Length: 368
Ligand SMILES: [Zn+2]
Ligand SMILES: [Zn+2]
Image 1 (cartoon, protein in one colour):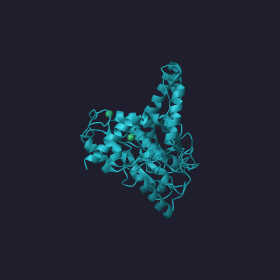
Image 2: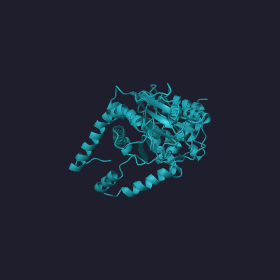
Image 3: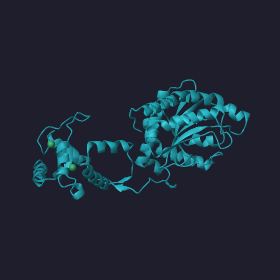
Image 4: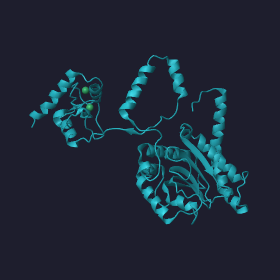
């Protein structure tokens, strides 16, 4: 969403900040009033304060910048179907792997049955919405959790953890599935709630979720299920070609038109799985070529532009005859180049410069 500062948008902005300010109050209201709901009548009443508050928190999720900016996410809150569930939840489904609570994996806010607090969790669906999962399903869940767990390690920085087990204070029912299906989670105490912490944690969780889908790790956990990225995979060279053609097409349009199009399409970039060929390169070759370059670029003859984290001159090892063109991965086909010259060789590919680099690479033979 793009905010221009018209009066209308200021109005929208005020509305958004009210939803944000109310969220902590709404969470407190769920924690204090929820159990009175299912204790007084088994059927859900839409006017019950806990239901109203849950809707308010759902609204806050849906206007969260990270969710609002992305077209492929769906927010859903539930306190049960007809009858109250012990564990109300609000989930964010990335439609690439999850269309609802029974499918795939998703970030979810899970309230404890005793309303002593709630969790943010990255959870794998149990596909058992009402009853307890079977022993074999629990075992399968644990396997799926273990296979994707490391993908979410970064969330530890925000205080998320794999241990101890998520404790929803239930012994049976769907909550048991949630307890075993949590990949990583963080508990929030009813007494100490901070809007900025919650918002930052949600952002981090959504980013990790998105990254795990884009990298494909999370698909591997569902090999027996039919989750696929939308659209066929593309080759990275094809995407580069498409971009180059489009760049040529937009190079003649005015600034005004360009800005107009940018604002119209302002969103997170679409992600597609990409097929690419990776050459398994020898570390020894890279080390040998860098060592003998002594910090000097093989093309322009200038020192490396900066030192790397280890304090060594930063030079890239380039194959004179490209690996993609059948070149050998040996020091006699490789030179160390500064990043500018490296790009230059790949963009311009000038025969006289190729010859110069080839002579440089051959010179290494004399050292033997
Ligand atoms: Zn250079
Ligand atoms: Zn190269």
